[in-house]
Amino acid sequence: MKVLVTGGAGYIGSHTVLCLLQSNHQVIVYDNLCNSSEESLTRVQKLTGKQLEFVEGDIRDTTKLDAVFDNHKIDAVIHFSALKAVGESAQIPLSYYQNNVHGSVCLLEVMQKHQVQNFIFSSSATVYGEENDIPYVETMKLGTPSSAYGASKVMVERIMADQALANNKFRGVSLRYFNPIGAHPSGIIGEDPKGIPNNLLPFVAQVAVGKRDKLSIFGDDYDTEDGSCERDYLHVMDLAEGHVAALDWLNANSDFTGVEAFNLGTGKGISVFKIVAAFEKAVHKTIPYHVSPRRSGDLSAFWANAQKASSQLNWQAKRSLNDMMEDTWRWQSNNPNGYDV
Ligand SMILES: NC(=O)c1ccc[n+]([C@@H]2O[C@H](COP(=O)([O-])OP(=O)(O)OC[C@H]3O[C@@H](n4cnc5c(N)ncnc54)[C@H](O)[C@@H]3O)[C@@H](O)[C@H]2O)c1
Image (cartoon, rainbow, N blue to C red; front, side, top):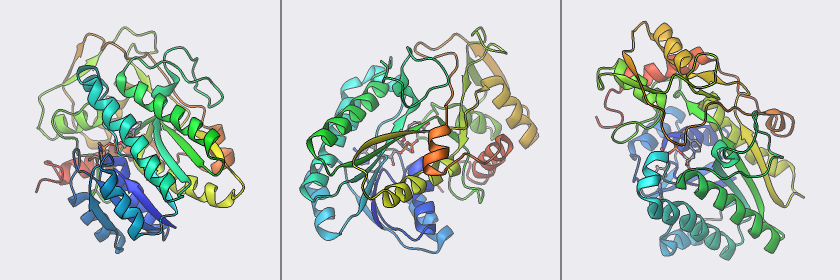
């Protein structure tokens, strides 16, 4: 298939592009590089020995996007591009709605104009909000996330549902990611957050490499086994393979129209303290940390029910916690400054 990947230079996007190329799909990456570097794509091409096409552009630039659809017969779109920092989204909510919601509408409009119906969206466990019980199952009603970031994901899922009602050819898949960590086992591509990392593992890795002094653990008095938050961490390569599985599913189900959601997680929660201990064990280093007050909006624990992806997509997270730690460390220690060489 010829696949347009928005946000394909980013963390999850670059790993997915690698898997798509390895599965013999043709790839066009469309990215404005606001949180990534084209170097990730150069490395993906070296790793796979295959070529992709890169267009630098913003999804809200519909003229540029339109030209891409004019120049290529696109079969499917995988839509990663978004702003993703939960904390920042409280400071600049309008930018989040502008980029994530308006941007998605622009993309869907151009797809509609060109009669491209296959759409895979990067959603998030955050769409379950605070009101649903764990483990989260796809049959649950969408919740009310406390952040503008989370709300933007709920809104795009709603837009997809409305689009499917209006256009009976639309074929949407919403992949609800849990907590991706790790890197390609080569250590050649990985997560390269700009500025201070928002996520736990890049922060831990930057402490280990000496870029940051200390890790802050937000809260040790949650109602969990060891008092720290619990999340469903999965290896980014497993997550990337989930996108290829979703494309295969769309191909195998040629009669499918509408929108289908799938959780992509391991089905197990792991605490922050356990992640830190696993990292220390895998890389033989001590991570200095202090406990800070809870962050507002952080839920104590959540994880996926991953049955639906297993039975319908034939996808399961198979890499171990130790793989996640070792691969993160290989990437971070070989690339202490990320893609800035
Ligand atoms: N990383 C996670 O923990 C996580 C969890 C759940 C969902 N997600 C979602 O997965 C997707 C990918 O996340 P990631 O971790 O790879 O983030 P990332 O920031 O590394 O990748 C996002 C990419 O989109 C690009 N981009 C942003 N706005 C754009 C725009 N207007 N036009 C064109 N390109 C634009 C960025 O330059 C970047 O390359 C996002 O939609 C994110 O919300 C991520």
